[in-house]
Length: 245
Image 1: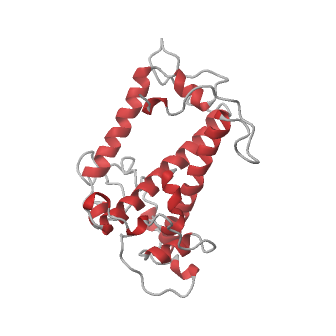
Image 2: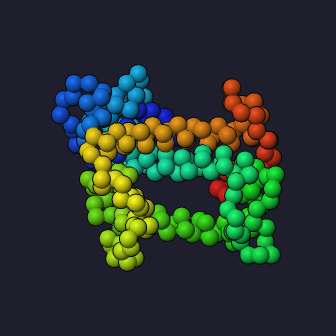
Image 3: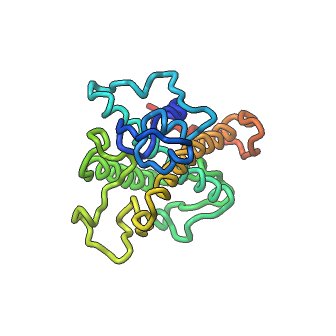
């Protein structure tokens, strides 16, 4: 949620700090794969435009330079947006009783309990199941940082995810199930204009999903805290418990 304060000032799926040529309109901006900060902000939200009250777009984190910082911020928002979209859809599905039809843990351990809300389902998972989930996430993070040909802080494209088969880690298959960035090869068949519009849509949808999933959790923790929000079953636990001492 902290990244939401950047608003449209930063963070898009384009090469860091590579300026685009002058564009005649916001629609034309959506065709370009490379944006300046101001052009990206206008393309994402023409109403708000460039808005960076904290000056993050010109910051220099860890003395790595502004270009590296810009790439890190953009990659962070795209990644968190993708996770939030999964979380938002998953929350709605699980809240309505949709779940995997197979056990997620050992037979003697509870896997799914009807009537529990998503946070309560997480609390009910055994410690070993949670450890497996975090281990898998850690592996994906590890590979995303070390498997790139060009890191996003060194001029690579923020949001890209390295391909397992291409790197020789896993054999190539007819359906590229291990290519998490483009598992079905759809992106390679799209025009540059379609790709650019899709990137903008992904960023905007990710921002909306980050707000949405936090709104769900806030409403469960403090009923009535979300104006015009859904009425959800209160949650007495602590969502951030895994990160608390």
